[in-house]
Image (cartoon, rainbow, N blue to C red; front, side, top):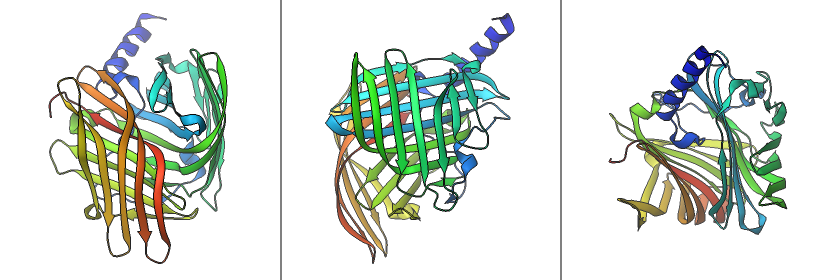
Length: 342
């Protein structure tokens, strides 16, 4: 590797450190005046070549049988197909992180189609999938192997995907099956999962925002994806979208959504939120969910901190004329802080 490449990689690593703690794929949004929600198309699952320095990622998680949950991610920091590639695998047993691996790789390990969900890492398909143009339902095979672990899973979407600008929730809800290998053991698994794809995220996000929460909640006939973002110079912002059945979704108005931290547990120099209450109320929806931490993974890089929670979720969702059911599921949510003191 010549000196120019080394210098470029150092610059990119410094830029990355201002955006992502410990190079762990996370979910963040740019903040338009209004979040516009629309259907996804095939190209939303593919590679989006960055014209300016930015971040793109493909994120998957799943809650599986035998109390296993998993996160698989591939992130790229790039400009004009030059940059870094950051794969990650996290495996949890009863919510406890039992395998954690991330790497920083050269951009030569990555290749991707701009027309469809076909993404390669080290000459092996990481994603090979399709999105139905009529139904908005996605079907992906996901394979990632590095370090001492391997994940090979089939994500069969069961709800219409949606997007806002450059953040695509490809699978708000999916049936998942396949194989996980770690600790010299093979686990055949099945359960429910989620997939999103984000591109064109500016590296200035961390300097413009104090932090955020993100999560997803499943019930028999609904799936809710939500995020609450805390800009440094303005009021908090909320984006929440509720899928109903396999075809319908609706955006929740920001004033109809509340997230409250009910309990904390002691941490090093700070209290860690551990029980959360989420409520949505308007003329047609009454939604309440209590999310209780089973365990969490904490990652810190300089002043940036990130928590990925495995949570037990109990609640109820009522949608006039459509749904009246209880929520009793496990899920994944996360919290990010971009400074130690805020």
